[in-house]
Length: 126
Image 1: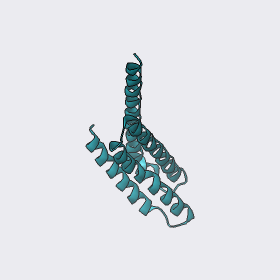
Image 2: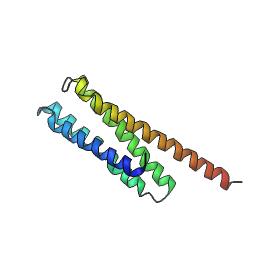
Image 3: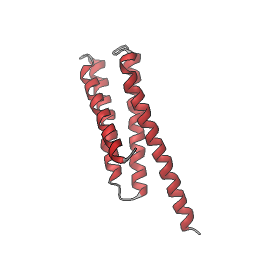
Image 4: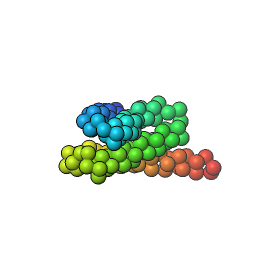
C-alpha cells in the first residue's frame, strides 16, 4: 500500500467515525464518547499526512507513533461504545476490524523505519 492509498483509507476511516459519533445517543455518555472518538478517530489521517511531510526520518517516525497512539485510543472508545451497550457489537465489527488493520499497517511502518534508522546509525559509525 502506498502513502496515497493509506491517506485515503485513513480519511474514509475518519468519515466513518464521524458518522458513528453522530449516531450516538444525545445523553451525557453518548456526547462524551462522541467527542472523544471524533478527536481520536479523525486524528490519525491528519497526523499521517503530517508524517508524509516530515523533515527527516526521525520526524516521520515520531509522527507515525502519534498515529499509532490515536488508533489505539480509538479502538478503546469503540470498545467502550460496544461494552456500554450504546451500539451493538455486530454494527461496529467492520469499523473495529478496519481500526485494527490500520493499526497493524502503522506498526509495521514504524518497525520498518526503526530498522532503517538503526541501519543508518550503524553504517555511519563504521
